[in-house]
Length: 220
Image (cartoon, rainbow, N blue to C red; front, side, top):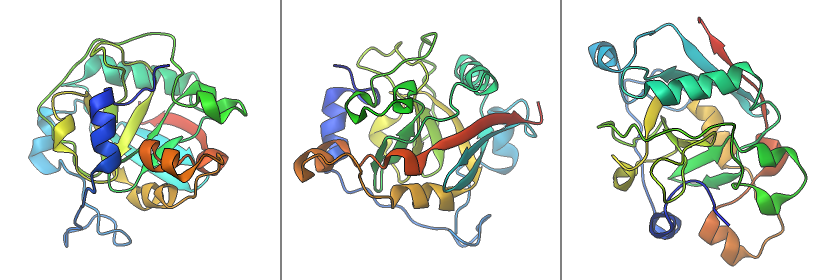
């Protein structure tokens, strides 16, 4: 079966790499020391609507995201459309690899079968819009199969840095508030009952504790 995020070779790398990240002193959020990767005049290259935000309300708190319409217009349109139709409400972040990323957006997580988490799709597929933005902490990017043009509804939020994903997966936004919530989701335990070896390879699945209660566009 197809697990959406990274081509098989990259999954193996991601499962074994220990990726580190550092906090900056010029923090937007004093709780995490987090500063979005792209700020100031650099934002003008990537966003056409700086006051429009994607809001992800989870059981662990709220994540506020900036979207990059100028470099990934089709991806932004897809994710915002799905959010407006309540596609994501009741899904959860099903794959959380510390120092790497949390992945969510799979409609299959609405059922009670952990075994199909990560295999679901949305109503459409999107052609790749690879760009120069580095996969740094707080970046939003797009899950896919080995086919570059297979992106659909699943996305991931970077917890650390992963340069090997650059220009291989479509970056379409960044977290501007709520990285402490990403950290809380990352700290949740696996609930699937899988053997430790499988959890270590594929990443913990925190289940409904990481539920997206609602996801919507603000300032549209």
